[in-house]
Amino acid sequence: MRFVSYYDQQGTIRPGPLFGDPDGPDAWVADLRHPACAAHYADLPSSMQAWVELGLDHIARRFSDGQSIDADARLPLHALRLAAPLPRPGKIVGAAFNYHDALAERQMQPPSEPVIFIKSGRTVVGPNDPVRVFPHAGDVTYEAELAVVIGKSALRVAREDAMKYVSAYCIFNDVSATSLVKADGGFVRGKNQSTSGPLGPWLVTPDELGDPYAIDIHLHIDGRLLQASSTSQMLFNIAELIEYASARMPLDPGDIIATGTPAGVAGAHQPPAWLTPGDTVSISLSGLGTLINPIAAGVSP
Image (cartoon, rainbow, N blue to C red):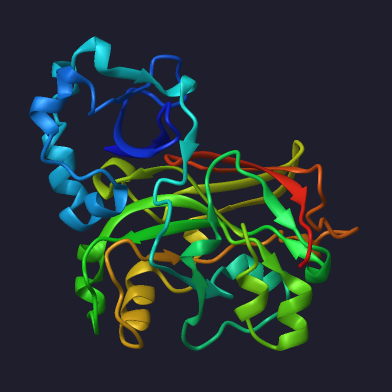
């Protein structure tokens, strides 16, 4: 099943199940506050984070028969303003240097174990929200990634059990201030600029997505194709990343594993394709939709 978070008419973010083909004109989201739904779903909490904690598989079973939802309680997807499906994840554990084609492009030897960093959940913005490029950040790149949502507490998880902890998948753009990463010799500042974590457009459960290593990845800026690859190019797979990260820190429900980006980041192009105010970035992952964000100028404090 697919799940979204959306803004209601009062500007409050609400979770909802998504029905129908999201690329077609008839996709819709159930309005659980509508009188036709309220009696059946009044016990459900009002945030996607709480749904993840309850278990999206459990939530999906509650909506297994979407046809029983009254037509008056169906909100057309195209009429909704979507928020990030997880508006405030706990933390994002990113994987660097995790695609074979990206390593080859940079003429780097593969690392012997995952290279990870932490990105704050407060960097997250949703579909069509602006990504702000700040003057102090220098050169800033996009990074199209498969995001993995953790569904239950994980600590020292064995590789063979790791996929049991995956709640859903999503698209993530790990916007990165390359100049700051190089200046610092580390990831903290460069990965944690404001609005540098576009996430969306919806969550897709593992049974809906299928093979997570057969996903095509495409990133365009204003129609120009800059990244074209597949999750088959991952160096360390999802189970290996969960095993490695959970051996070093607790992973909590609603945390995200950002699995790395393929070849074609901004600095690899001639001339470099650094993000510039006025650009529009579009990332498509097969089975997961398309995440679009405009680039805007930020004002440094």
